Image (tube, rainbow, N blue to C red; front, side):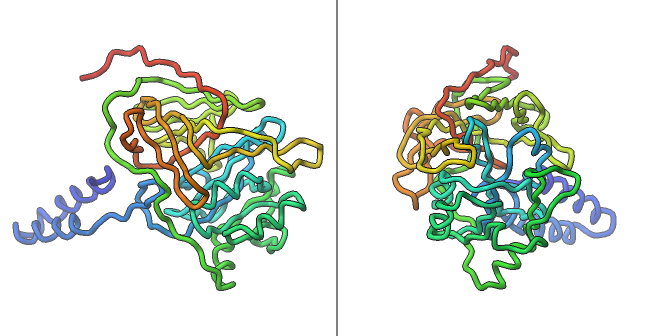
Length: 338
């Protein structure tokens, strides 16, 4: 399957040689382009390499917006943290941006979520003291800010603390390689990609709630993605584009109190992502009720339609909302186009 960009390039190449070469040359030139395979990332189906996996904890409060580099993530997890707020874990592989942020601290849910990706590089601003040994013992490359140079974990003077830490992701990966560490590259984590399946319910919007945060995703037929609004405000990137995945997953999980807490006395919630449950797959302007299953921490998460068949995702960025609340959908009342 060719992307729109790829198709345009082929047509341009065809036009370019049409006026300067014979039929044999035209055929050879176009054949070379077509036979050159497009590399796609196994995590998101995006064009790009199956490169090293970097996971960055990113602030999700109003003060933290606009976020930096998040549009390049292959996968973005939305997790509940203290006070009912949300925080993001962004998984990068197909493209590693130079800068990512604002970087914030790790949470206990991250350890379980990230295990399925292998020995990733984990970037975060810090963690509770009794959780640091847990991170160090996990099967990941622990590269939190507390032991790294300020040239890697920089401060953006245009922002205020604690939402002004920005990671130089390129320099961090150079450091990990220079340390001789093994870094996991992209591998399947359970889901598949494919054409839009039959069924589903056409919607214009979905709303997902946490105790102190709300996400709205609104389908853009023009852009063919779900535009994200955080607490009613367009969720923008520092580059000026609105965040919006092609597939948005609502994964219903148990959210339990953990033994950890913040310095203000808030209990850190733990989102249980091992086991099975229900959820919704949003793609191509529709939602599909689904089930998810992950038997253990090393296994990926499989999503199935209610008839038991594997549920294909649309190729492109994926956001996963880990929540225990049912979403609200706004049905699309427009007539279906044949």
